[in-house]
Image (cartoon, rainbow, N blue to C red; front, side):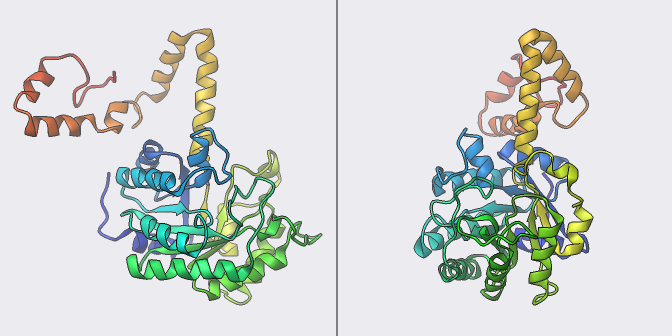
Amino acid sequence: MGTNSLDAGTRFRELLARPNGVYAHGIFDALSATVAQMADIEVVYVGGYAEAARNRLPDMGLRSPSQILEHARTISKAIDIPIIVDIDDGYGGVLNVIQWAEEFLSLTNVAGIHLEDQRYPKRCGHIAGKTTVPIGDFIGKLKATIDVRNKVAPTKVIIARTDAFSAAGGKKNRHVGGDISESIKRALAYIDAGADLVWCEFPSPDLISAKAFARGVRKKHPNFPLAFNISPSFKPGTWESSPLTEQLMNGLGYKFRFTTYLALLAAMHAVYTTAKKATEDGTNALRAVRELVAGTPVEIVNNLVDVDRYHKLEEQYDPKARERIATSEGFKAGERFTY
């Protein structure tokens, strides 16, 4: 891992302030986060969808805050680039959000958290059945989160998300396709309450809705940074027809752009295609993967999981470890194979 003298919150704020803003890569565990950092990703996104999905569960409020916290803690220990963590709706009322915001914001590499205005128990913004709480209720939770942040880690960011655009009971605008008026109203209220970024969850990568939200917010707050979820859950085919690009989104004011679970989707594709080949010939499937990864930073998994570092720790404290390692078969530092 590399090192950076700045704390995670300050580093993220600097990246966000660049002319092109910043992209965060959605990962699903400590190893995928490590590999993303090796690929020069500057920020990773730790989402509830990916955490639930890796346990083969839907993102419908089925995972406990302690499970999500442990997930984020493990990732935080593995990398040293800024992390943005999804804390859903705060896991209950204001007392719950006070407790859990402090826990998450105390993690070293967490640069910020996002909180959404869904009614408990929440669900992925792309799963039907979501509802929102009254604006006043969410503002109370948001202000509580901000107060916790100011006490625990003042540089870290608080992102306020609204699901009002496509929640149950919304008034759909026929030109935009969702409740854009309510979404803008909530975003402005969340900015006034002290949020550092606002995010409207959209059901598709539609330019009209993205523009309408950005213009509605920035009419009152012309320089306020917006967040955009480049979601793998958008319906198949919508990206092919969407004109949205990183450059265009940035121009609209979406300074923070992120994929919630891109690494998970890519990994599942790799597992599926490799497994299909292995049903025909497992030996040749392995050969093919070895050829595919040869010469890349992920070629030797034992290097990714720091076997060499743990060998050195053994040798430092166990007088017999050096001889035991030297005289036995198995992976040793610098070798070009993995067991």
